[in-house]
Length: 376
Image (cartoon, rainbow, N blue to C red; front, top):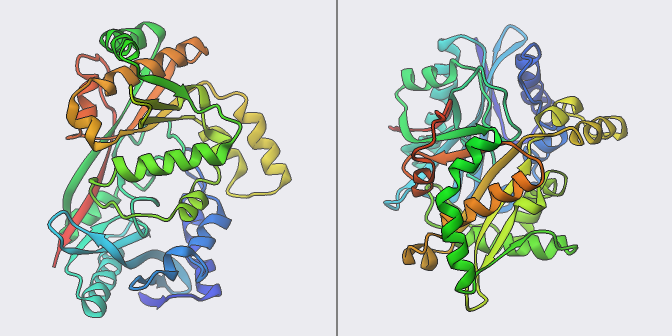
């Protein structure tokens, strides 16, 4: 087996991207990423590569002339663990079903992080930061995927663990179907919502015609409420706007909410998407007029929602007002009013307090994800 590495090389970048498509070509559940978006992230003009101290190296494994694996080793100068330790990353990992290939790729990536940047703590998979793709799917390979869900071959977690990686954090997604089940979920939240409204709280759907104003609100709230999350790194507003460019096609505005407290301060948000896996899959990773027409046709048929993110500023969270439960009630009630009875509550960290909102639900979390850590 031969190995080659590069930072920016148009021919090798094409091989790097093409391997992902060839590996999943016969996987009916696969949602192809947009080629243009992936190529943009691997180009020297991408904003992540312009930041001082950031560096990366891409590795391709070949058997003969055939690519059998790929990985990127990345140094993000802003990324620190909660104890202040600088962390290296491995991402864009794809591999044929061969543990020896995986071990060679991870050898090259970890050696480069250690020798070039002195990084001995490594997280993966993570592409640059948590604002981009990260985590492995570890359970739920038989479920219908949703757009934005980590997607990988079932053997990847095992290959990482064989190499010496251990789980650093675990997430779950829970799908609840049917009006009765959803109404049962929000019984307690209704009373809390009524109480907060009486106190002067306002729950305002993100239905403003000024999309940029709503995006700026979302940016400010996410920056404040997620600042304590594992792996959080700050983004400039213009960078956030670039990453959020396709939100307008997926955002379920009546179920995406800004919350204001009794003093008129913006304190919390929820972010809900129309679940568009079938629509995006129909585009086959391409962005041209015909694929866009296919997307728009399938988009109108979407009947599943993805409750993707929610957050509140730390000061309000410390008060224990029950705002999380009230917000959940508002979103689910709006969904039911609009005729949606199938909701994914996606990517919830197991130890996060939001997971407690679902205690008593008779629905098991059938999807699980993990971020792995290696100390060398």
